[in-house]
Length: 401
Image (cartoon, rainbow, N blue to C red; front, side, top):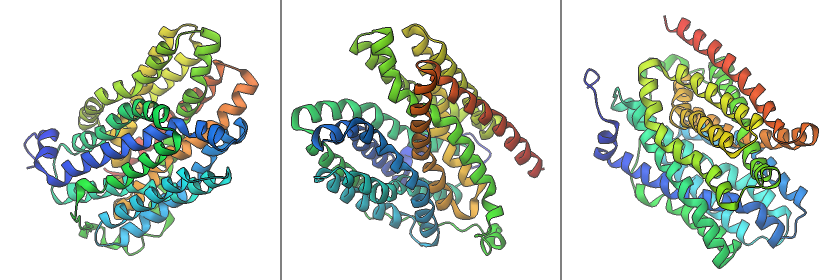
């Protein structure tokens, strides 16, 4: 099997579990992306929160790494990898229902910090189950398999915001949050009663006996921290790029929507390309190239005086997120193979952590240097990430010899 080329798409279609994982992520992606852009509006319009208070909502993402680590640890001790996927899905559905029923501003903050942080572990544990299956049935196209499954979530993020805007406008924001709860619960349906047994590699038995030692986790933690540096610009972009386009460039609503919407579409197209690049040159080198593209995207935002420059920035940023989406969790799992559930949880929790840090940096940076120059800050952080990726890649290559 390992000596002949294989089609990742054929592998996904042939496997009942991979097909189910694809549909599960599609449903979750639609539900989560439908609600995410509307949450600030819900806090302001339905709960009467002042705009500065509503902006602090994303600080609750700081709880995600703790929840991701704990869920991953518990998953690595369970026999059925999908047990914690289902538990996280149920917790998430209840959390979104509680959000929809909230009658005080503090309730969504508490729900996000507790229930939704735990719920974020569902996707991580689904990818941990994918790693277990890939370990049992090795293939040279494993990067392509993960990328193909991850594409479902990206498709969901293309469909969801459009659906959320329409649904919220017609039925209201509280019903929209209920619909999100239904989607989060429904992500379990494609998997039915399937089980994925935790895979224990015999060659890792000695390390597993001392798996709590922090030195075994250091490569994973370093890689995750570097990814956080590279991802900080995304929250700044979503928060302030529309304002820059509306107030300084004075472009129409349709053009603003096109600029924001082009990134996930390009990311979807680039996911299989990134997987092939990683197969040929190695995942860490591909991630380094993605960070270079992210640097170019931030510089394009910072230097743009027209919409054309913003489209260029979005195209370059799509390359970064295609690398993060298709390779990030796989690299994390390889860096901590004795606990792929923990690795998945820690890495995927870096995305909301990067969102919280980026939001804080954006607020301070806009006040200090204004728009669009605030994007020089994530450009500097991404430059540090590029250097760190190069160093990490060289060290891993030296250890592998």
